[in-house]
Length: 379
Image (cartoon, rainbow, N blue to C red):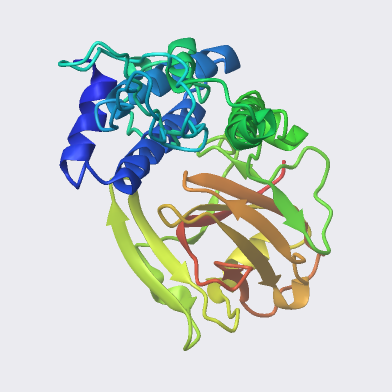
């Protein structure tokens, strides 16, 4: 017993197999499952799908023949009883007429020399297919042997015969067309016919950290973030902030600043409040006195909180020496150096200054880790 026959018979055993309506539900389920399996397999051609439906149609015809009664014998010289075929295409033998010889499907009934005919149903759709490669070939159209079995005798009313067979033909054509369309759509989706140019572009995104400046244009050769240590060459750095001395940091009531440590070292994790308030870092008056009248480069070594890239904004207030304009940086998860330069006027600062950092310009509560803030004078 092959897999198709076994699956159908198992399904019939779960209900009343003598009930024709129940059997038809099982057959429909088998065809529906086969259609799902065909549509899920990109390697199935339209021709192969039709052949698989033909195979399951033949198997169902064979199973169904076991449940339907044979046409009774015709008594010689007497009246022939009415012959009833299942489904839709059964002619009737009228009383007083000799019954034409039917086409026999299956073995001859024991105890009689007259041929018998089995009734063949119109078979709808079933069959859970565990995996398409092992699924049998099928087709909605009945094979030639099944069609011959259903032809008991020619009917004088040809219009009635044709009228009863039209629904089966229409169903076959409709299901075949839908299967072809479904398979075509599946292949089109697999090959990217409906994808936009942006979806077809599978190149890795190129989005390195950048600097956005609202009201400041960087000097020639200046970049936003740099790799740690890239700005160290030939520079004499002055420390502005270090996590070892967080006393010169001010956080508003709805912002947070906390010293933390991991395998990358110590850092200050800052998180701006919902109001967008920034955390202030003091720039001592003594530091500003060294920068007066000179071109200075500030370096903020920072990263975003794990798994949460953010946009960090920076503002400065250097008292009598002015400010640095507002700057925005796209801060990633890797530790980087974010640089900006300021040309200070040649005057006495008069007081200390501040550098204010907003950890999340979009006000979504994202945090930034500040490892160090330093400044150096351009030679």
